Amino acid sequence: MNHLKQFLRLSINLARGRLVMQGLSSRLPDPINVTFSVTRRCQSKCKTCFIWKHDPGEDIDLETVESLFRSIGWTYFFNVSGGEPFLRKDLPEIIGLACRFMTPAVVHIPTNALAPERILKLTEEILAVIHRETPGTVLSIKPSFDGVGDLHDRIRGVPGNFERLMETLRGLERLRSEHPNLHVGVGTVISKYNYDRLAEIIEFTENLGVDTYINEIAEEREEFFNVGSGITPAGDKYGEIMKVFKDAVFKRMKGMRLLPRMTTALRLVYYDLVVKILERKEQVIPCYAGILNVHVNSDGGIWPCAVLAYRGEMGRVGVDGDFRSIWNSGNAERVRKSIKRGECYCPLANQAYSNILMHPPSLFKTILYGLGLRNGSDD
Image 1 (cartoon, rainbow, N blue to C red):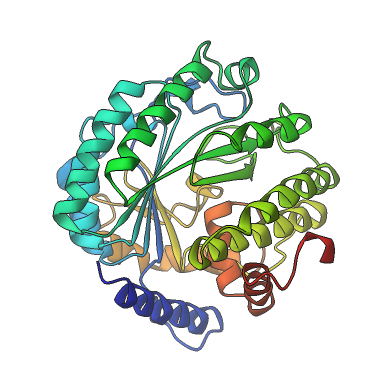
Image 2 (image 1 turned 90 degrees about the horizontal axis):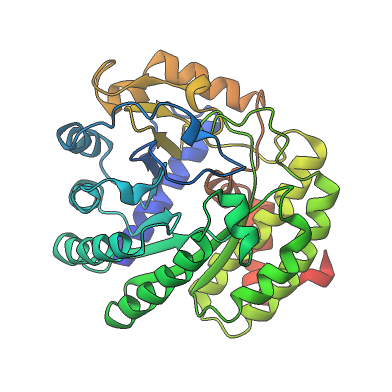
């Protein structure tokens, strides 16, 4: 993996994205962030997501996946989503195809950690596939961690989930000692069910030995069938929550190397951004969904993001053509124009990171955080 070449290609596509957003070019960039929901099946019964209550439908097969990835071409960040990704037995084959045709610098897979033995077996197979196809690609596995002990089990809807989470993390730590390109993290979805326990959750993560700990705001998404559920904390509450989290993150940053410190700084700017979005209920900075980011549903639907989801579907692979024909279609352009007009807003994390990179004041703030020239007391 030539990471300098990857960075240069990333920079070129960011520049193309800016030209498209400003109306100076009609040539779309390669999406720098591709999210693929490999299945809607899930064993969890989360209070924040109701995907488990709905018919999962049929997952697209490997032949269609290969055609999809060939058509997408290059991407920098390949994010696997679900449902529960590890329920697909052919997950290593999917990652292999992604590496062969999209050559991502990073492959990221979240998990509910309900099947430790299966997760560890497939992770080991995925590491072997990456080593064969694109040596140097980073594999990031991120189990969900929504509370300590019983709180996690209550939110996730499965007794014993916390114990299996700990077992999964222990196994991943063993694999990480043998595979330097494996990064292990945990992630918390902050909702009305756990926002008042964040200090306890943060303190617990400090002894987990993970590479990263991130949190995201609980969102009402078409993808999760939870619109109207009222799971998102109010903006003022989230501001209080984020102060606690940011203080802890700033302490951790002091011992980090430059690259992970910059990545963490990007998240810190995201946390600031979320507070403003929830307070103002509007796009705070321009959104590049459908330009730099794309979400592929398990049925082949092409979305600009997971929040617009079915409402913003641009087309479906195999029904409306290949990815490129859908990506460049009139319907896709109508969706992009709606986003550009600010007709939607959300705190979706992986979309916000691209938006921050494209917004000079936010990018400058990220650099200041990363270099230690600004800290939480400045905000």
